[in-house]
Length: 73
Image (cartoon, rainbow, N blue to C red; front, side, top):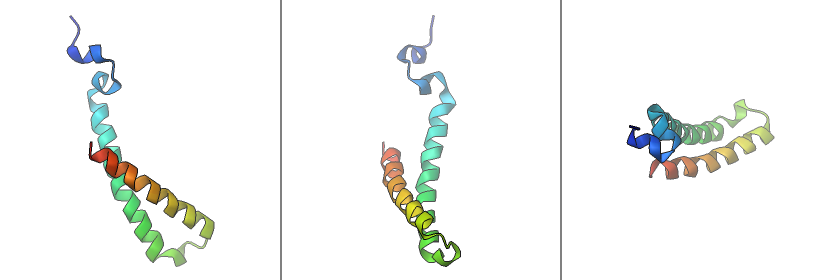
């Protein structure tokens, strides 16, 4: 007789620690995004490549609401 979780077919049911790992990844993104924004905003003189700085800040601003929205589920 198969376990009830195997019948659903969702990958996190087949790998019980996968859901935990995905949640930890989103928590890390929630922490890294504001930290990256603050670091680049306060220490921009240490990073002379302006194009890379703008792209990183844009990426952090995109990443933050995605991570927060995922965490609220």
